[in-house]
Image (tube, rainbow, N blue to C red; front, side):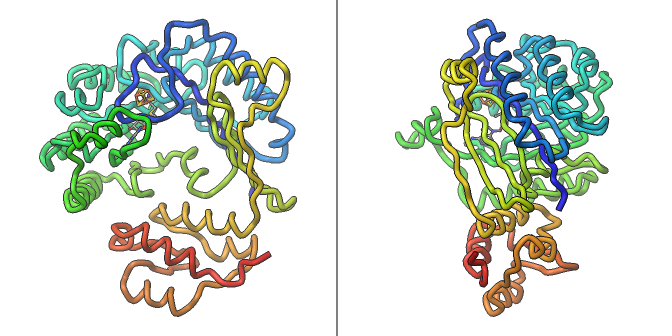
Amino acid sequence: MKKEFGIYIHIPFCSSICPFCNFNVYIDNKNDHNPLIGSMIDEISYMAPMFKEHTLKSIHIGGGTPSLLKVKNLEKIINKIHKVYKPNNFVEICIEINPYKFELEDFKNYHNIGINRVSVGIQSFDNKKLKKLGRQSNEKKNLEICEELNKSEILNINYDLIFGVPGETLDGLEYDLNKSIELKPKHISTYLLTIEEDTAFFDLVGKKKFQENTDDEIVNKIELIEDVLKTNNFSQYEISNYAKDTYVSKHNLLYWNNSSYLGIGPGAHSHFVDHDKNIYKRWENYHDVKKYISLANSNQNRFKSVENFDVSMYIKDSIMMGLRLNAGVNIQKLKLVKDFEFDKSEISKLLNLNLIKFENNYLRLTFKGRQLSNKVLDKIINNINDLTI
Ligand SMILES: C[S@@+](CC[C@H](N)C(=O)[O-])C[C@H]1O[C@@H](n2cnc3c(N)ncnc32)[C@H](O)[C@@H]1O
Ligand code: SF4
């Protein structure tokens, strides 16, 4: 099996904190970013021996709001990765941005330092919905940024949309989808609003001041999204992700294929797989920025927790993650890592109920299976035989 990986760079600053978000982020007080960037650059080198046999496929600069960094700092990070990991010219280099003019650089500068994909957190074009989501933007400002981006040299553009927000109607969601399509991005991610702990929305739910969408409303919205985007030549390749032509996210595919990735920065997660050496490992960095910098300064690893797991867990995770993809998971290929069998009678039941399909060695969820994905995944994972070491 190919040894490949992606690098995720976590920039933990935002100019304001959205009421739905529980990522590891802190208000940016226009602090000096240089000490953190220095520590992240050290981490890029520090981790290199571990990934020396892996090929780098993607660099994803996310957060948080990486566009708050000066281009010079982004360039330092990208240059260091090139120097240490020597990726080829086809590596995907993506940056996440908010559509906030006051945070943004000229897109030309991003192109000049090698960034070839931009992911914009549009969320919606509806002013009321944007306000509810605590965004510092409105429809007009969103449109301006999208148009400016369309004039730049960067062709691979993604919009993140959120749906399932209180008060959002099917018509409102259709408006968001159609406005996005008009602006011709190559990729659209549609995320169902999830209520995360330690967020302002979570507190409102606790106080019964938050009207969550019903299950029926959500199913209708998922059907609408699939219908509108497919009619406009976006192919769904993952539960929440749609792409035109070949513009799938290389970085996210690494996650769904359960491949390796190296997370750099405070609170970043990493995953390391080496079948030849039977190493399966994941870890999470310390969240606190000062702690992260002090560990870097004393040349220690930045791990808050490390977990070594075994090949059985790897197989189960690969099935769970792979079934999010429309193409499904290549079972024959997985069996080369470690042989296993499914319980035939349980799998037949799922096949007869038209919840899953087996085609050319790929196991995948049907449309009906995707609606009940949690239950179906549970059934599959709990009916794998012969998976003991
Ligand atoms: C963590 S943000 C980082 C990029 C950028 N700061 C932004 O807000 O677009 C990446 C995306 O995660 C999604 N997201 C974050 N929290 C979410 C939640 N609770 N439910 C659904 N989507 C969420 C949003 O669509 C957002 O665009
Ligand atoms: S959604 Fe984006 S801008 Fe809002 S707090 Fe999270 S990372 Fe920051």
